[in-house]
Image 1 (cartoon, rainbow, N blue to C red):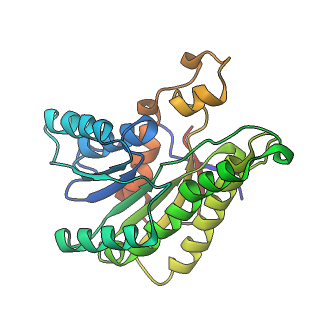
Image 2 (image 1 turned 90 degrees about the vertical axis):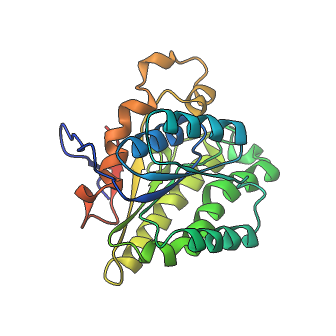
Length: 252
């Protein structure tokens, strides 16, 4: 599969997401935080899902201070959430919202960077739980709400090491290959049976805490900030990408 880029000089209109309800995982920090703020700034009601309440509250306050629609906070640790946790979340959202217009899977764990021969099982399973299993369970249980939207979008944050394997990236790389496979299978299943599109987005090198942990010797400012790559996240979440599904995109 050839990686795609968003249209050159893409400039989303200010009301791109007006009236839409979008759930963002990993919304308390990094790319998830930037996406939540950007979606809200373009008119969406954003449901902030993350494991640290104080970080979610800070994003909530920033959205409200900027005049955005009042967001929702969902404090949930994807590493320990049970199958019932997702079912209960979907049920609660179904009582409050008539539909869900977008779902951004951004939460992820880096795990240990070491040879597979030395990989620890506990760390491996935790990465898979957050990066793969949580993505599956949340999507499965939210599909009925997504199907109620006129045109819904599911975006999964991928990685270059999930498209071409690289030594010492261990469970994280394998989980991102699974993310790409999940996107392709789901997109193929939904393409002719629903109005939901599903695509993956590789942010590439971005100045986040995860990037700094993975490359401690790298000068952080050589990479763009999460806010700098938001046009790509807006493009795939908004109506400008209707009709595009099952594709792997690069943010730049």
